[in-house]
Image (cartoon, rainbow, N blue to C red):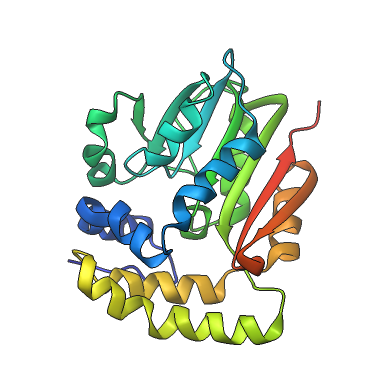
Length: 229
């Protein structure tokens, strides 16, 4: 099996996620101490999908996040570039589409809202991916990005970054089908922009009214934005 590098070559990233697909959701639950379920709920609440709306869940993996969004009654489609991840979720009964985040196979303004959870970090060009999401969302539509971020309290930040680099790989070896992939995970978290820097990128991609909410002291952040009317 493979692991991607921080150059985030799309083929390498897709192959890596194909390799971890079978136990990916379980591994995430173990490594987040069960907080992943709460993060999905908070993401749904931030996006606030309505029953009449169409929602894009990008980098949806097996669709576990899409299933949470669909609880709202909205029509939600799971999109991901890893066929292995989509295959794991094929029994969820959700619309699923193989898609490249930089070249989405959807018409302009075809969704009321879009979201991406713990996947924007894996897109080779962050701003281009955000801009492509803006293209497929209607004017006035919403964006929510849930992603690892930077703890705001320095003592916790130091402890957290040490946990990320030292504890994630051993935990992954116990539960994951490809532990080396979680070395990439740890490296990508450490190199990811902080909350303000990501907000700047979101605005640069054409979104407005960008705001965020810190979770776990900033270890995770939920960013929300709107497409200008």
